[in-house]
Length: 444
Image 1 (tube, rainbow, N blue to C red):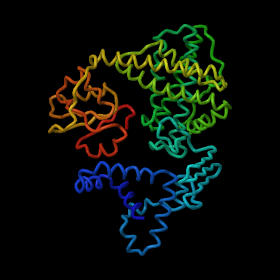
Image 2: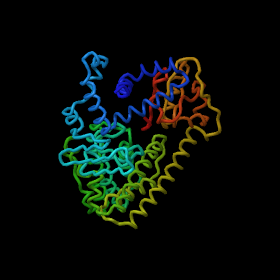
Image 3: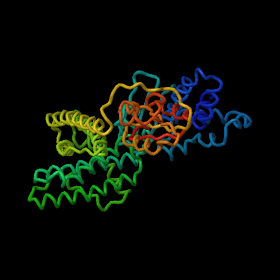
Image 4: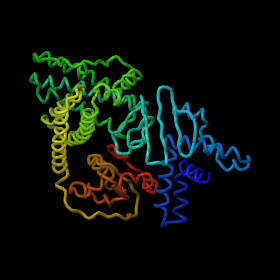
């Protein structure tokens, strides 16, 4: 009970616990905070939260009222009852028995045996199914809410958007086959990069904005259809190519997203090995599109790369369990990624100068400060220009560290150094930074 209360207080009043630990145990503050954060994360896990909060409530209610008064009202209200758990998470409390528990929901079941190497998980029609990052729940997939905070609704919208990208890619292939030029393909190219980038972890959890991408895509597809017709080309006959979402509301788009979720697409294909190749290709293309979007931001877009990106997505639109074709497609996506990174390296070098070995200060410089994380060098340059001569020191964090190696960026004297370590330590490192923080790309 004491441990649960301490961790819960840390969840709600993290900045205060940080200050207390730093003042009392300065040499141990990072280690203790890391331990508390890890335990708090466990407490926040949907299954653990059900067990811990129910145990806490039962234990607390068995004490006298005077004992309960040690909990702030804010924290007490946060401890859910069985009914509130059912309404907020979709799950209800059934049983605890020696670290073995079962959580059931209408039409869904997840059975987990804890504290055992013989763990088993049975999943049927989950509320969401997202496994595009390495931190997914149970190392399988996030099925109720993402560890990143993504909701099932947002996940469904992103699934609908990815399916829209596949649909439009089929038309892009048809347009190029009909003789479309790079200029004529620009609108579809840029839409593809922005839309695909938006589905990466932590880039965009705004369902209305995702809906805008989908509806914008319907206009792009119509323009491509007109282009194919004008050039006497052949329209794609695939079912995915002819999906029309132009008249759907955000709620209807969300419902459509559930129909094209990962489990449903896997069932449609009917071959787990082949579908694994579909998944590998999908997530690799997301990364390639993200970096290609960075290239475009620097004024670089390669039509040949975009042609190959659309061809790869077009292959992923098919439900045919074509092992040989899907394996070749996955390998091709690897080639595309190499080409995109080469183009990005050239774009960075041509814009900011060739990177060179550089010593970077990792201690504080007196004065006002701003911290920048992520890997968008264009955003960093814009900030350096805006803060030039204003007495504000700029520090990099995480993946922004290489910025110090570019002559065009390190020429700014107020780019004074690097703060902190890697992105996964942001939670407690950001709490200790005494100034505003800018996070670029998806690095939060």
